[in-house]
Image (cartoon, rainbow, N blue to C red):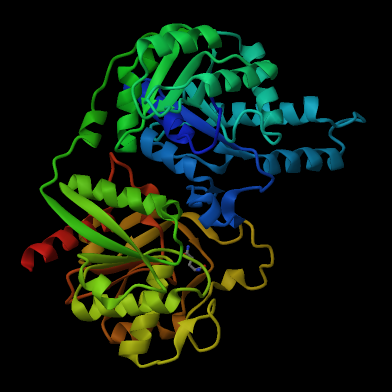
Amino acid sequence: MKYVVVTGGVMSGLGKGITAASIGRILINRGYHVTSVKIDPYLNIDAGLMNPAQHGEVFVLKDGGESDLDLGNYERFLDIELTSDHNLTTGKIYQSVITKERHGDYLGATVQIIPHITDEIKDRIKKAAETWTDKEGNHAEICIVEVGGTVGDIESMPFLEAVRQMRWEYGKGDFALVHVTLLPADTMGDLKTKPTQHSVKALRELGLEADVIVGRSSYPISPSTKRKIASFCDVDTNSVISARTAPDTYLVPLELEKDGMADVLLKLLKLGPGEADNSWYSVVSREYTSRISVGIITKYGVEDVYISIKEALKHAGRKLSTEVDIHWLDAEQYTEEDLRDLDGILIPGGFGNRGVEGMIEAIRFARENKKPLFGICLGFQLCVIEFMRSVVGYKDATSEEMGEGTHAIALLPEQEGVEDLGGTMRLGDFKVSIAEGSRLAELYGETEVTERHRHRYEVNPAYIDEIEAKGMKFVGRNGRRMEALELDDHPYFVATQFHPEFRSRPTRTSAPFVGFVAACRDSQRKE
Ligand code: GLN
């Protein structure tokens, strides 16, 4: 196993995750099998209970892990599936060391950050890297390890020390460190290298040396600036790689490849140059023949909360040569005029009461005005509530999550008495049977699919017959659980309890998203 460790300097939000995922992609393009580990140095066990408005989307993995959104970038760029073992947090590391200590596993030793915490970190990185296989059962030859945060943060110290030990244990040839930094431009447009020099110095103080420097900048890095960075940071000039801000993140692998990243890394790792596979180009180069506007109704003002939905729409749009223009509409503020201008409405997942009435209103509008509508998770539950209120006749229909009324949506029975909030929802992959002859069956091209989940509530079984008698069809099911619904006599009224966005890839689109984008495009053409 060879390791490529990616650290970040200067500041957060540099696109370190996209850079790390792009490195993985170009190594795959050279014919290697690549997996990844993301380190988040916070004390939370996982991202499940973190506010998405502050921290971005909680990405749900197949095993139900509630992870950092960077795992989504890895799954999309590398076209692989990861598990919660691939997202290390300080919380997970300390929890297992303390459990072992209580169990008496350290045989009288004084349990310390070095060696016990650092050993735990190294063991877990190795285990995640070595046990991973792709769908065909291939093991990885290369593991990308992204260390979250910025070098110099107190939180990331034990992780960087573990990485330093790994470098010593593996030696050159099996380990390369890529340091991503910012090259800000001055008022004349010249790229400044001082912050990079300082962050490389901070790395050195921790005993780490960068093998490759990736400079994030608004302009390409000139040869003389590359030489300057190389001399200060002790790397070859061709190991200074330019990562210009790209108009589309999927272009970043091509930018890095063009600047020599794959050649430099493969040489450092003593691996052959491999065979260039340019199929990634077809993922990123698309001509659009139409353009649609989709409104996402949300209570959050931050797009990162729904990054996987944004990407899934983009993937489906590319497949259909349709550019998807997303409008983020505040669930508490939008007007009916805003909805009229859209080609389709998407109601995403969410928790709690705020904004819910606005979302229900948008669903009613879409149902009555025959605008394509796609509901996901909370969006699915709200479609049921709106139908119960407007069509079935239960004016007080609501969800048990929201309060008093007729509970069209009720707590999942296995959730009764669950007190801990962390990691206790119905999470991850479950099979869904899709009714033959339904729109979803046609879109999926199969009647049994696997999709990811994250919910505590479900359609109340007591009302299913009444709802179906009025024409809403539950076309997706898992035993007694309702997983997907459709309305006939509507260009596209589809909602899913599961989250299809988490399995969408630029290389493999998600059926309900493709159906939705196609319906938006077609209904626009009819106008
Ligand atoms: N709050 C709802 C539930 O827990 C929906 C969850 C979601 O949208 N992810 O069931």
